[in-house]
Length: 534
Image (cartoon, rainbow, N blue to C red; front, side, top):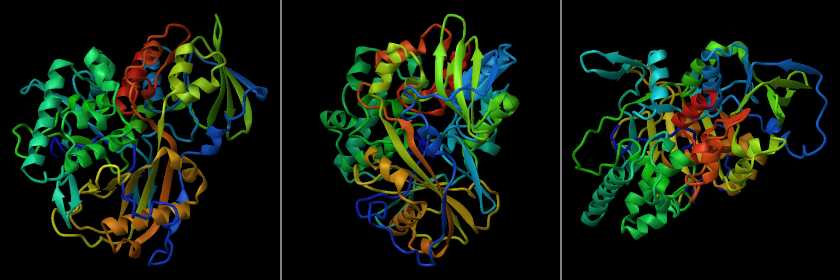
């Protein structure tokens, strides 16, 4: 995987959504082999929507429980917070989670004999600022100390196998995701962008977690404008470069150049590996951990030691804090009854817009931060195919497979192959996981249109852009929808003083969610969970 081609797709989506693709309304079509089985799996929007209209009529609790501490929300931040509480001696810490499996955006699935992801599907090697993540990876055996090198090294069995990434462009597959520059002027802009990223890296400082870097007037200036406007002002508006950067932003943030801040666009590269154009010197090795089930491999290991403390199928309806304790009213989805929980303290590991709704008296910082937070809807489609697909010329089938598209013309993010990590050299049946970052305007369609409609759109898109024979081989499509998958780092989001206020809040409530960083990635969520637990 090249440095320029590294994709930090933490959360979701990818396939093809050009204006001519089948993902636009009205483009459903009949599959060649007959319509495959299609169904929704995973998250239950009905549970989340139970919170709507709950301003005054809450059910009475049928049973009451007491805990040493509560964690509300079982995504990565919540699971990390629970681990931290237990490690600090709070043996009766308990976690309430809306869904039937903890993990948030890092959950997995199984179909046709294959494990596959329902969301985030890989984790880059953590940088020095994410030391809590590194410590945990050592604990579970993904990293170990090499005495000769005097450094941590990864367990190569869990690194992505080669070939890792390829891009379909101009009728053929190429190795890596960075499109070739379109001439000398284009190449010059590629190199100037890399130079600007390096200069900003040195001048301002960037880190992951982001709040461990300084926040200066220079950061604020980047945060105050869109990435597209900054590229234009810097004379970096090259079509091929813009296409790549737009893809990078949609991949990590759920929205493109015109929506995310320039800080977010620069941070994508400057917080980790920089940017190197074609022919630039520097290391190209940026290994990532990945598994057929994606980051569910991680979330399940984070949850397992505390499984008896995790209560799934609990919809948090109300949180009240007073001088002596925290009181929580939750709905048990299986028993269909309300239950009360009390504890001296609680970690609120919920998205900000949910936390603001369920807190009886939300702090001013929470109400402020939630009022202007925007979220990207995602669709994750797992397609079981019964035989290898006919491939186009060029680079061989890879773990991550993407079609080139001009900036703003698509929400496509490609697909990953669940069988790629297998050591079997013979290709056969597999599951392809196609990711789609949808416009916010399509959230209602994601909720209301049928699984069959969305399945046919996904199949049509992939057949049009990459694999014409795909409709002959799809037997089943399992779809996961996220109405509010990840927070979009719009201009002003990272520098919002309300986020810093929530991270530093003192009282019986502590907040821990990637929303507090202004965008959603594993390292941010995990570290915020550790800090909240402490």
